[in-house]
Image 1 (tube, rainbow, N blue to C red):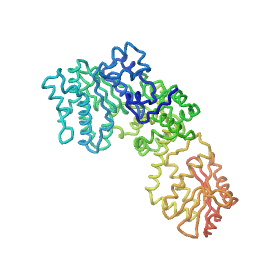
Image 2 (cartoon, rainbow, N blue to C red):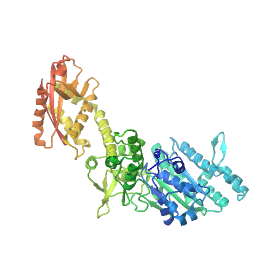
Image 3 (cartoon, helix red, strand yellow):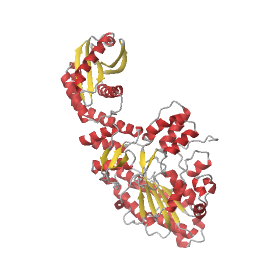
Image 4 (cartoon, helix red, strand yellow):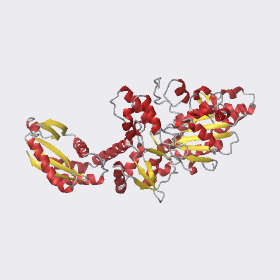
Length: 567
């Protein structure tokens, strides 16, 4: 690559990328596939941040009348002269992205939709003075763009038929059928469900889409994108001229997300070939049809970060673009069987599940099985094949998504621990009193009912660190204690030192992880011997605390053993 191109972080407008020297991974074969594929209405469902909006923008700039043909110079589609001659710049296009159609109330969300459609109608200003439109047509156009007191106003019936009406006006003006492109079609439904006006939004979207996409003589074809494969019964009732192309479909499987070859070329173009392994570990692993793909948002952000700092470690960029509420709900709803399945997923195993890919939003939380399905369709889980019975073998796709699960599990665990104040207070008193039986009972009960976040492939030191962090979090919840972790003391670093409310007392804990239950007692004794041999108690003695309790604590999977001594 002779010219160093900018990386298009957050840039979803195809024209801007092509005219302002941004790096572009060529997805224009999507156009060819779309034209060669039958179907009047096609719905593509892919997870967030997989290039849906950019692809839709690309379609708009290819097909729309008056486009700049040079935007496609040097790209794949430019070599398909017959398709270019027949279709480039030949159609009126209605392009809507519904990603911002939301609000705390139905009225607020409805206005966002009205404003969006009105602005798209105003974008086609040629209709205002079109000799092809009669007086009644002009009144219809005026109803679509009416403004009162600085706000767009659209009557209920006008809104219901707005996309159909606009397409008919464009058809009359250009004497050419219209393309309708609707990006993130399911966002208004998701937001409506979250804020309690789902039924109203479903009714609106069903009528709006029904009029625009069914028996619309002005329609050439339509393309919709979204995250969730919303069931036909919710908003597509009576619509028989459409096909859904989800992440399980082999058609168009390379057109959303980056392939391995595309990522290798990107890294090579920026002389970052050495970063391939970590990029693959963190951001690859999504299975669309027959192809493994990377999340584009992650890859672009990681390359940009590394160009600024060659030693920068991978980060969870995809995670940070949402609240990951779905995983939070899933973890909170999990029973003991599901918690065991989550542990297996985190350990790198596959879980076999029968999935329902067509759901309405109000069905998602009705059962844990529905949540498995949504986690799959939204990218938090991917498939590693199918069983003979047709069930999906689900796995966590990569390191980043594993971190999503770990974070939400830790948040759930923290809430579970601190919501039971009676048991927690009893545990703290047991620590102060040297009651190892009560300490063991509490920790064993806690571990048994929790979700382990320890990767089975992790080295023992990493597993010990996970138990360490868990225990520090529980102890730090006591507002009257000063808890210090990995503090330099004596001839080494003590795992945990606690300065209690009693100025004469203190606690030192040393933790060990073992692979076999039979080794737990011996590990506790080794931990106590380490405290004494390295004189960790001197830290508290130097603070005037002479009543010191030493704890050797051993963990093995979901069991612990506690042994105590006085210093």
